[in-house]
Amino acid sequence: MCLSDPLHISEITLLEGERVDDLQYNGMKIIQKTNAFRFGTDAVLLADFALVRKNDRVADLGTGTGAIALLIAAHHENAQIDAVEIQEDMAEMAARSVLMNHVSERVRIHNMDLRNAPGSLGYGKFDQVVCNPPYSKEGAALQSVRENQRLSRHEGDTTIGEICRSAAQLLKTGGRFSVVFPAQRAFEMMCEMKNSHLAPKRIRCVQGTKNHAPRLILIDSVKMGGEQLHWLPPLILKNEDGSETEEWFRIYGRA
Image (cartoon, rainbow, N blue to C red):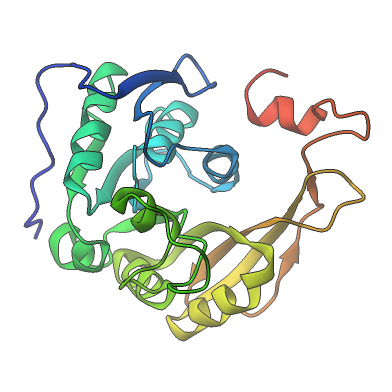
């Protein structure tokens, strides 16, 4: 039973300190704050990496400004997406972006703690869960001055273990949980996935150039899946001369 109603926004307005940015895919736009956390390449990469099938029900945990939810909606016209965000102002802003892009019938924004998502949205109801988790452990890096930046970049009181548990509870058996995460913390993420009965299956390292070590890693796991890993070719974003690679152009829909 769904206990959470999505935010209903009837008017597209820009508040002080907000601007409209190009999501750089299929004409999608997004409202963001100039002094808060804004979407980056990692969101674009995850939306492309996730294996969303026709008519899948997708949950986006910690959606922030709604970038991943909007990009998945652009990539997959039949997907139904429930996006969860704990910060009220960010959730409200994401809901206005959904209205601005005319996808309100397929994308729903919920202002709630992602740990409460299974009880509110339904246990075992989703085919796919995606998440771009905070990259830094609490206390492991300089804290952002603004609270919304801190919550977006640092784990705070929500750990990656809790994120994995919520994803597993939301998923059907055989459903997929996909993340983008710092490469140096890949082992930690895969251990937490395993603890929640999410078996890592597809892994792709993201490199600035072919001669650089991976900065990010994309991991796709399957609930109650087997142990075999499938290593995909590295994703190289730039050529040695600094120009974007063909793969970069494909991901951004400019091929």
